[in-house]
Image (cartoon, rainbow, N blue to C red; front, side):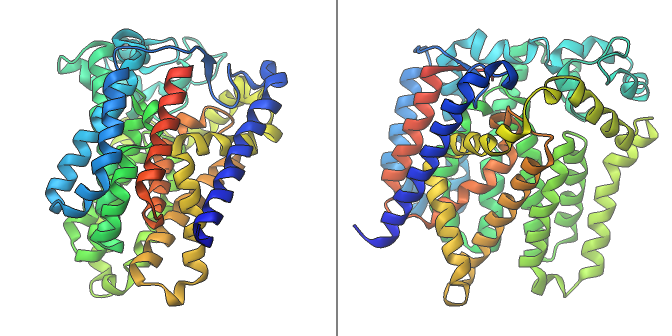
Length: 441
């Protein structure tokens, strides 16, 4: 066994130890952690379901044929295949819990967005008075997920209802289909900044991510897609010197900030993209920045004119967070146990890939520029995630909340050798979690 592979295995073993520690230390603290199976919001419930055969089949197909197809397919065919396979993987894992529990009911529970669709009959009025219902002791306070996000998150489901796609089934399928495009966005950015070869090597790992367990019918899957496309368009803007892509990147980043407060940290990843494309940006920097800012202003201006104050809402959210579970859950446990959750959503292959990412950065002067670019992009995502962790505003449930950041750690797997073995480890982890635990999403 060669030395780099041995180091990969030792790093993966350390990640396993972190997860085991989070489980063992968390069990006696369950009353304070407020999760059923620390560090995950889940309960122990071994089961199989209608999605089990399909999930096993998709996993086997990606492991067997994914690396070769990614190397052989044209770019457009690769994107289409990746989207189809990712959608199938997410949906089949969701259906392990059955249609109702796995898809149709997920977004209708007491803390979810569909519970308040009827309160948005007058959308302008709902936006004007949105902040008045954030605190727990306010009249008709919003459910936890509605209060915990800017109103664009809820408006997604309100608009689905308005166009006739009513109920949890349509909302769940929307999250799955749109969420699956996040992998396409990441691939687009990696190709633009690091080259097609590395994008192709990353593709099977983005498809077969353990994060798919939580991307099924979670609104955070949609947030991940929008945030990821903002970065992808920024990558196209700087590499192609396109003001159109710059405006689109600004528009989607503005929308991202009104879907989730925490996703403002995607600015760190965006900054890395600009840094990597800085030589090309020099040819028309003023135009690119101007169009990006013009796009960025659209969504904040629309919500502000409608009467929603983002800063006031965030201030009230911090208070609401500490009024609820955030005020009970101990920071001293979650500040490291959150990282165990990250291991579970990104898999041991990503852990090994992050080790190799560090090695590339250490040897950056001897490495090809594409590998260094990918390593910097992944490192920016890791920095954003660690910042979110240290903030104390992400105590628990990060297997769902950090899905957007997780998507940008997965390309580190492009640095790995023996991809089929690592893909097998990714698939086995996802299947075990989905069949042994009943997750909160």
